[in-house]
Length: 111
Image (cartoon, rainbow, N blue to C red; front, side, top):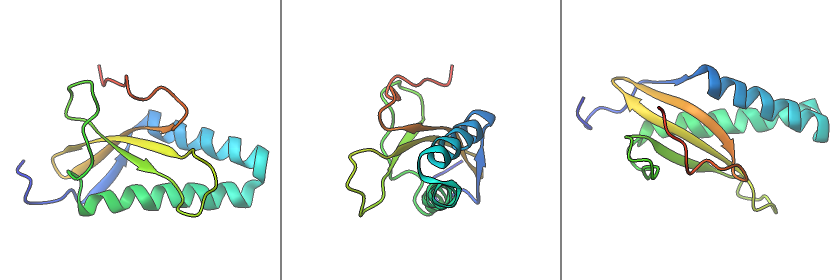
C-alpha cells in the first residue's frame, strides 16, 4: 500500500487491549475509576489521531516497520506517559502494545 491513503481504522491486538486494561486497573486502584476511565479515553483518542498522519512517528530501533508514538498529557507534572507501538497494515493502524514509558519498550520486536 502506498502512503497516499491513511488507514481508516485503529485495530488493537489482544496484547494492546490487555495493556489498556492493566493501565485502567492500576489507575483505578491509585486514583479511582472515574479518573482511570478518563485517562483510558485520553489514550484511545490520542491513538485515534494517528490515522491522520500515521507515518509521522519514528520507527522503533528493531528494524521492523513498526513505529512508536509518545502519549503524555500536556499539563502533567509527571515525566511519565505511555508509548503506543504500532504499524500500518493495509487500511489498518494496528496497535501492538501500549507501554508505560518506564517500561523497556525500545527492544520491542513483533517476532
